[in-house]
Amino acid sequence: MSESAIAQPKDSATIMLLRDKTVAPGIEVFMLRRHARADFGGAFVFPGGLAAVADFASELEPYCCGLTDTDASTQLGVESGGLALWVAAIRECFEESGYLLARDFNGDYCQPSAPAAAERFSDYRLALSDGALTMVDVCEAEQLSLLCGAIEYVSFWTTPEIAKRRYATRFFVAAVPEGQTGVADGRETVTSRWVDPSDAISAERIAEMNLHPPTIAQLQWLSQFESVAATMDVAAAMDKSTIKEILPRVLDDGRRVVIDTSDGEASAFPMPRGERP
Image (cartoon, rainbow, N blue to C red; front, side, top):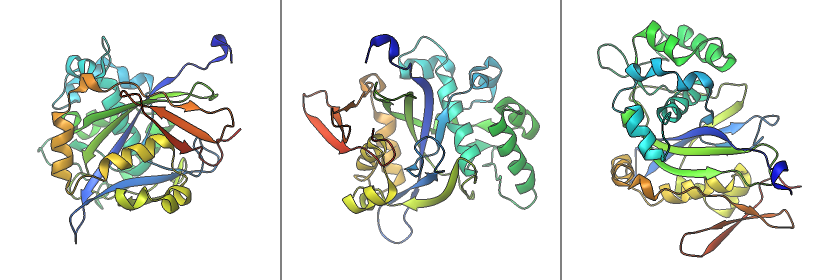
């Protein structure tokens, strides 16, 4: 493939929402199955998507709690505009799942699914997805602060050069807001479930859930933790400058994806269903 024919990756963000198991030690992560006709159709993924132009609006910064654009940009290794990826993660998560990482003017977790608010916030989800509203509009209407400081950046993956549509995706991790419930939007995503990372990385589950290599790798990372607090402590202590872009290679047969590591080793994953040439 010539260099001019390689699609340029678009900035995107995805977020791994975590909760503690109620019976045994361990954590669960919220996942959604993509609609068959959407990108990554049929695959289980974490909530996320493309960063929108409105996510980069400077008017958003006053509504972002715990993180400035300067700090966010430093973490991502960019000159400016880094905070937009945290905003995109929050917005896409809300659109696709209904979970909203935000506090109200009293400092309490926002409760989008509460009876008095459910219809209103359902309308917000739809309007955000359609581009009829921005997060500034929602924050102003509901007097919300986005919990950017409660979200940790942990990984950076870019779609292989062979793909027609490519994404430069930043992975984030956060605890699910207390009292909130989530559900697939019924448009881009068709169902949802809370998943045990250790269970999801078995060969049987990888095939059943049609997991993509970046998702598998993140589930492998999550599987080492026995609590949300431990996960977030490790994520917060990470030296963000050591997070390097991972660009998988697709082998000539189109059936395997290879990921090279900094120590010279390589891991191979099967190409997900629907992505093979």
